[in-house]
Image 1: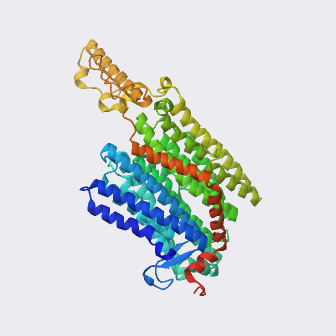
Image 2: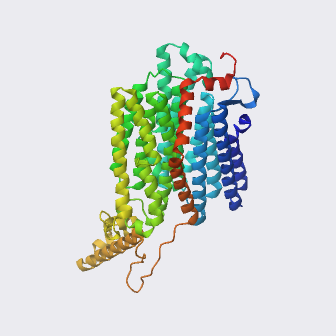
Image 3: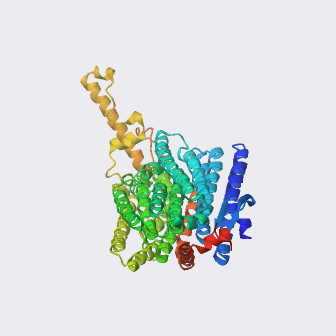
Length: 576
């Protein structure tokens, strides 16, 4: 049964993408229904795979019936099945959010004929990476999801998105070239790229060769996972994309890199030659990332830096190379995928409600939209690790594993993790106090009239270039023109304040005779419902933390043992 279900998380999205592309823009409702149905089916299959893998153990499928290790092998174990479940869950939530946004905005941000097929291809690439049983198929999974992500990141074609997309493409191509070169060296040194076979053959190589191969893989995967100092690309790339795209990127793409580090470090290089290097990288990632978050004033950039920072917790657990450390890392990956996705969806709602994601331009959102305040507060406190949420449970498991290790460096990382958690709470509290809790009258404290006018459009920008015709005007006429510009800037500021606080109706602002109320539109129900469902999922992680942590511990035991994975591929035969 498990072998029948194994290829479906990859096959269903690819077939769904083809069908969605054929439907095109002629039948948008059919395309939306098809995409949601496909991801719902993928989620159901993933849950079944997790239950079977947890009860029956790991299983492998040789695609096309080719003998191992000649053909493509897909392997399902507790780790890969768990990652499939959480990936399918957040992907479904994000897709429903995108459907709601498209219905509300006329698909301006997520063009339906392009978005849905590309999104399904992205999910197919993610699933393929989780199931890959050889390095080259893992590379193919990365390339599938990265190719789709290039399209999604540049949707809309704005200058900021194109600029961010170019940076993202260059960095991704660099890591892919490095990964491909490493695969060539693996094959040259061992004659195979099958990971179960590599687990046996790599031990026969000289230590220097092993270290070179391990280093190349780690660098490639650390770029993809945004591990410091290879993380500078992320905060400038993710915030420019539409809200659903940013959410799925933040939730899944970096975690595929983390998954690759977990899989290769435990299966191919269990000796721990670079564990101390990983510990230092984890500490730097946590501290530098969270300091960057504290320095930001835009919610999306704050979340992008916290995303980088909390990757450090996962790398910390991997570097401990113990069952407790790996279990904590696996649990935290699951927690962070759900939390980060949810927070970026909430950021999209905040921008829609308040007209901005800059905390200095917002205020009074808690009174204007209490539901939005709840949707932000719960995952924000979860991210900060406040008891009894799953963030606290994951961090506690990692810190206990570090203390149990007994070394001085793990103790330093424990302290660094505690400081990072406190600074995360500070960053989230600042967003809450300024955007939600602060009275609306105080909201434009740092938002000057000139800045608001600049945001309103080029015609109202302050200090325009001198007009030759104006230079010849008499002094009195110049003062009149200057006064008109000041009135326009004040009007722009008032309109911006009304939108940002949602406590007074927006006005045209050009005098009493022309003043007209434009009440703020309510948030689209589908977008709110999908975000609320994701918040419920994050709370569910807390309610089910015991069973979930048990699965993580059993998965960590399998990773440490390696035997279940190897036997699932080769069975009772000796590894050639």
